[in-house]
Image (cartoon, rainbow over all chains, first blue to last red):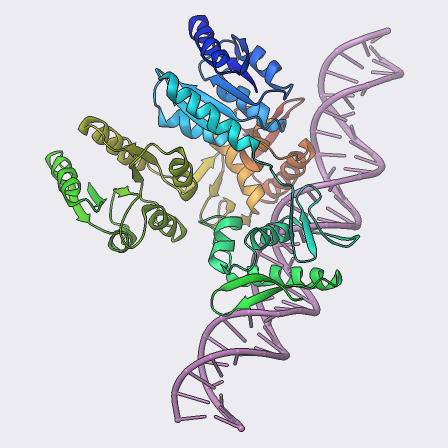
Length: 224
Length: 224
DNA sequence: CTTCTACTACCAGAATTTTCATATGCAGGG
DNA sequence: CCCTGCATATGAAAATTCTGGTAGTAGAAG
């Protein structure tokens, strides 16, 4: 487990490194935002502890650029005050957790453990159910050797279905999850995409079908 | 200033009401999620203090439904533990701030003040610059009596421009603000929408023009 | 002043998403 | 068993967004 510490107060940086090393992590420490970004960009770390106030480039910007470049290393932001503003900005920029200075060692370690554990989970890029597989990286649905490409919305609907197989999912929930809680899209929209998906499922000659629960929503069923 | 307190521990609810009343707020208190939702739906409150753990319906769901129904009253969520999970869920659902129990009176009041102040700002539904006006509720741009309708993306680009008149806005920023920091859309995309907007501006015979800053971005200028 | 190059404008078309209209089907009451 | 009314399915078209290509242009370099 390799951790990057980006913190300009040298004393704090060293203290952090020391604590982490004693807990069997290998640690690199840098002291300004630009170095932080450069090191983080390598993508070799399992976790980055990132101060917000930094010389040359602040932590939020570092984080933003990282995420923009698709570096998804978990980031624990250090905030001086418990400013909600910072927190919201941080979440917007893709932070995974926060820690407010000053903090106790136990809490730091707990959070680092939580973040690296989360990362440890096999982030399956592929869901399967019945005879079909849904692949996130290619946005496609496959059976046997056959593929069909899905559009973004089709994919999102299918993902919600397949991640909860045989479970009834209300249309309301599709809308909240996919269009967001304040959109005004009609239920019919969900119905349209369900219709698209059924067409693609039958094109694949799959035994999987999307069943309707009148007045509520849909669920996946394997019809063999 | 009218505040709604939704909290099932009656003692705490009463204490909160008492503190708030002493500070010149008028307060209604209810003790479960369903009542909370019903009262909140009236939209008459300037702030809602909402516990997460509640009988009948939890606070996150109450909040989610409120936002879905376009009730934008600021909400201060009360969390029992400082669970980051709850916090992130809360932000997703549209919370404006958090407070972890137990808390001190001063902090509560400060946050309520912050939320109601934020709300107090005139949330202008309309931006103007030069001879044009951009209207958020109708998604349209107008000059004199003439209107043109904008698509979502066109509107968002225009809003960013008009909210920062004469200020240079890098293309990078359009992309981060409108498409999100991890999208991979090309700069050309911004250029295309700028092109659409210019067409609509000239259709209105406006004196406002979108100027190009080569290698960087765009800014609004009134050419009279 | 000319040339070169990188950047920008914008068209045309593809893909996706959304809307609308209509057909169909289900469920409960008569 | 048939009606009626509401929910769902789906084709078709409209609207929006995105992509790729080409031509034009500003500004640097010579």
